[in-house]
Amino acid sequence: MNNLEKRILMNLLKIRLVEKQISERYAEQLMRCPVHLSLGQEACAVGVCQSLNIADQVYSSHRCHSHYLAKSGNLKAMLCELHGKRSGCCGGRGGSMHLMDVSVGMMLSIPIVASIIPVAVGAALSFKLKKKKNIVVVFFGDAALEEGVYHEAANFASIHNLPIIFVCENNKYSCFTNIENRQPNDDFTRFAKCHKIKSHKMSGNKVMEIFYKTKDIISSIKKNPSPFFLQLDTYRNVEHCGPNNDDYLNYRNNNEISYWLQNDPINLYTEFLKKKKKLSDKTLDKIILKLNKEIDEAFLFAKNDKFPKIDTLDKFIYAQK
Image (cartoon, rainbow, N blue to C red; front, side, top):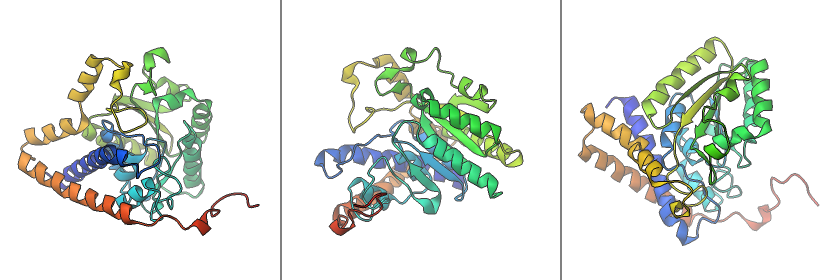
């Protein structure tokens, strides 16, 4: 494996293992915030973020763990935030849906559907006005395209030729509602074309293809600033909100689930590396063991960290009595 391949593998596995542990530990009730897991969607975050510089900015939504970690967010600060502790990335005030680490360009996560999009467009406008050569990436789900604010923001970005990549992680569902019951088809590039924004639709589970496509997009934007819309078709393996499997509700069928599990992004990537003789089962096991040790230490740190002081309760609020 070269350095790039190794970094991508480590990031994919780290996100998967962190979220698996969140899922397994959630019943302990030490994490009292809702969690929206990206199990099955890791390649979207890693493929895009691995193409970015540290000064490039990422904005996200309620399903933000993968973007935070892929942009090199601090793991201990993330887990402290999920535990409501003072060392959390938002001081224990935000929880799972408000992750940020400005030091690495993970700027903000907002859970209200589509509300992060205009904020990211504003950041891209700031880059342009300050004549900076950086890129803004905003991640959102397919349901965000059904909110009017997406169109307002996309229209503004197009008119002003802003350096932003709109990344739609299409996992087929808005909570429990399939695209088939919400849209005439699943090609969302039409929501870019109507604003004269260049676009591309591709698999969201093939991490190297996403990486190279994002590199090309970034190169194009830096030569000729303008927005781009990237649709990544992927799938979440667990429930919309929470740590468990909810397939007993029968809102998605077994054939569909089986297809996506067979095309799991981490399995696709590890099999690719093994086929190229760049990865062995022994090496993979060693990497997983090392990552699990790091994650265990981070969970222990979060468990032992202190809660915010009561006298800071009114800090960071807009209005005082």
